Length: 221
Image (cartoon, rainbow, N blue to C red; front, side, top):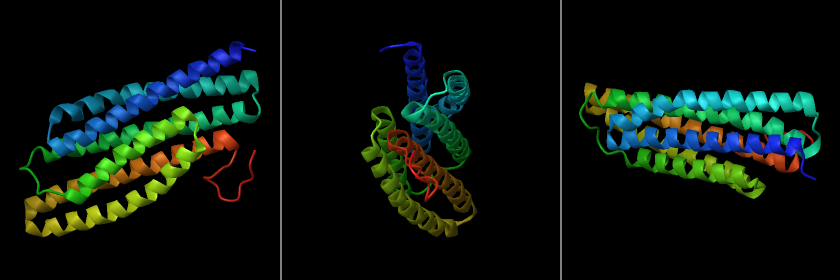
């Protein structure tokens, strides 16, 4: 039977849906700014950060209020706890996007850097991983969430390749070293975004079947 609690859960889902969209926009704009050497997407990413922060606060307040007043159990309880975890990770993803955008603006002050195919492969994989993470959350799919966690390990391998590629470029001279260092910071932020995606996937698994994948050995709810 439909009740007020169902309406509040729907409101939470709408908030979380908007937050996943906004964080994804920030990430896409930041990475596009680096790849295409454009300032506008970087600025748009940074301007979007306050919106993501506000959405996180609203989602967290709603979850805490529902926990206190409704005293949910079973999956509803896991949904509220998991949503707070997801909101926190989405906010961190948006923060990493801002870090990337700031590095992009620094890179625009110097000549174009040498091509870095390993880094571009990594950034492409990151965007795909975020899209898969968003689908796992939206659909409440433990199977998709498991795939995200596995793919994150592959991104770690891409990060190693990108770092080696950038390290090799540092010997070309002082300017090349500075550019490569900035891109190394970008690569690290991309890796952190993917780690946050894996965290979101863990929360999806927790909500769906009660498994706490973040803490090995925890019993199901």
